[in-house]
View 1 (cartoon, helix red, strand yellow):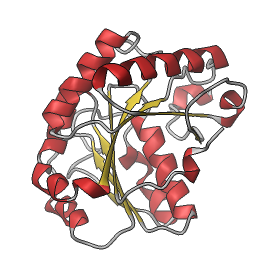
View 2: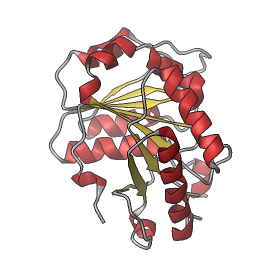
View 3: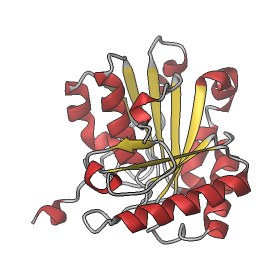
Length: 230
C-alpha cells in the first residue's frame, strides 16, 4: 500500500468538498505531515460559510507546530459575514514550501476560492486541487449527487479537480467495508469527471484492515466535538 506521505505535493494544495467530507481534518493532518518533513507550511482557512469544524479552531496548535495560519477576518466570532483579509493574497508571492487551502463546503463556499482565480491560473502548474469525498454523509452517497456537487464547486471556485480523496468515515463507527465502498464510489466519480487520481485517507487502525487500490494517508482525528468526549 502506497502512503500519501510518500507522494510529492506541489506548492499549493486546495481541498474542496461538501459539508462533513472531512476537508479540515485532512488539511490539519497534511499540514503537520509536511511540517514534520521539514517544509515551511501555511494553512489558509477559506471557509466563510460554516462556523463549526473549521481549521481556524486549531490556530494555536498549528502555530505551536510552526505552521502559519490565515483565516477570514472575524472568523470564530459572532460576526455573521467574515471578510477575506488582503494578507491571504500574499501567499502567492511570499516564499513558502506549501500552502494548504481549506475551502468551505458546497459551491457557495467555493466562491471564496474563485476570488483568487488569477493567482491560481498563474501558478496552476504548482497547484493540486483535491475533492474530498465522504460517502457516509448525506448528499454524497451516490455518483450522481457527488459529481453534481463536485462540478458545481469546481465551476464556482474556477479551479478544476485534479484528484478525489476517499475520506469515507463515520467517526468511531467506521468499518473497513465502509471505506472500501467509498473507494469504489470515488473511482466511479473520478471516471465520470475525467479525473485520473484517487486516494484514500483515514485512521490507521481502519485503513490497515482495508483492501484498497489507492494511495493512503493516515490521519489522526483532531476536530472531535466536545459532546463526543463525554
